[in-house]
Image (cartoon, rainbow, N blue to C red):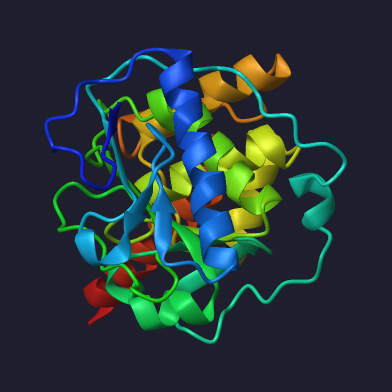
Length: 285
């Protein structure tokens, strides 16, 4: 994991201890407190000294980067008390925000593609934490007004990519932001695979949901989600780790000659039947 702080060189060494990772959570709290009181300084997780706003480049302010080559993952849970995500899921939300393309999964978590992540929009949604899971894209534009925390994960949308090494860390950070009254947005290129996978992991860990329930919840709000099969396998393993059982099975789908999650089968069947009808219609003409 690379932690980039204001006034810190970009060649920061990998943080490989639990203590280093906990500094990130401490930084989140300091940043949110500074934002909430309208301050113009940022607390560094390293020395807690105030850094003048004029000395901080907007492109690297509050940036934390995770490298997908880092396989160290802290499996600890945060103590979230009685104010849980599970209870907040019962709070009425508008799954379709005023901004097309941004899906609200919980009162404090948004999922979207990169094309709609604009400072003005995120300011109106009161987003305080941005997670970018698209190394093929430039850094997400950051607001100079709210000064959100920014996390970049270098993970490509490939079944061979191990995104699971980030499940605990990302979920813990999103939850810490929620506990402090902030909102988070997770995005990749399209908001379909990588970012959806991280949201599902969060809902399993802190929402009290099974993988199947989390998937159906998110899909009802954002129908286009479809984590690649490699990510779904990782989510299955994560559910096994969290709950001791797995609610989604991998099944062999003959038309594709490969395994798919069983929750994908109805959609694949419907698509296959549609194409069969189309082919028959073309033959009649």
